[in-house]
Image (cartoon, rainbow, N blue to C red):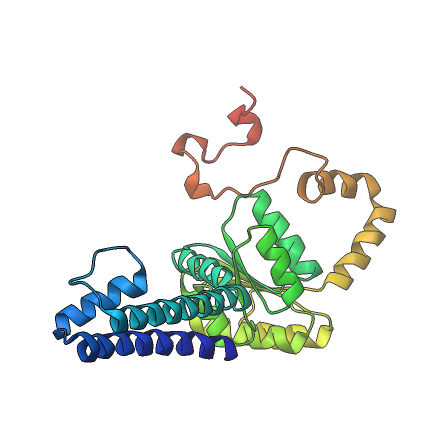
Length: 283
């Protein structure tokens, strides 16, 4: 507020000096209003145009004073403007506004709520498959990380409707809510389902008791990271070779091949009702 006040003061000072110049030239030089405005503008701007008439001693002194006042006001104004641009992160705000406009144009994208451990991994996976996405986060440090990595994001609380609407949720294909609190994830699911009734909602949960509530609220799938982690470790004991093979195809970065889902409707008609052997896909 103080910085903005300085800008308003700068504007007021400029108008004041302009008024002093106009009134002064009218009184001292008996100029018309137009001539007085002309003389004041060329004096304040120091553009170097000639005067309308030969100045007497009094007019010269007044002009010198007007030039000094103008330079002082310009200096104050430049300082106030520079402070405003730097302190209020003007360019950062401009960049964020452009990013919001880009987000509003997204279609069939995924909204990721929370950029913690689970949210970050979801983003990595979406990026690997070149799927459009936008992250909703309120933590300042995480927002700086998103900004450094040129990731589209909305700064705000994902449990509120405003942040979800800014993420163009009505045009989204899916939503992943990976907030640490089950209660917060429940709020997100409820709000998101009200905005978009047809898209996929995947929610993180920490407790078994939260799963049924999330399903009732509108979640399509519920993931419990701790449970999946424990089951995965046990599977590495029971069927290690199978798990490692699937991991290489779906999780780790070691393999250049990814498993992808292809809808039957997307296949050519000659591929239908045939086995993989009959298709001879290696040909």
